[in-house]
Image (cartoon, rainbow, N blue to C red; front, top):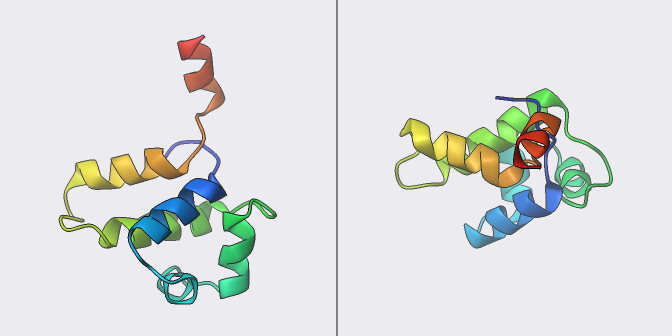
Length: 90
């Protein structure tokens, strides 16, 4: 994984699109529902470990989760661009 920051709104939107209830998803991520809620609302940043667990839980919800492209696409969907990526697009 790269140095992107987690985008809480994107995590919530993807979780809801996959019809995963917050409490159930929090358990899959190994955190409390309150912690997940704070991350999704961008009230508190996710640690690197929490970001990895969220990505893994979202990836596992897809039909072909073991395909390497799915994990990369999920990670890009739920993170903000890194400063390097922003510089490259400027």
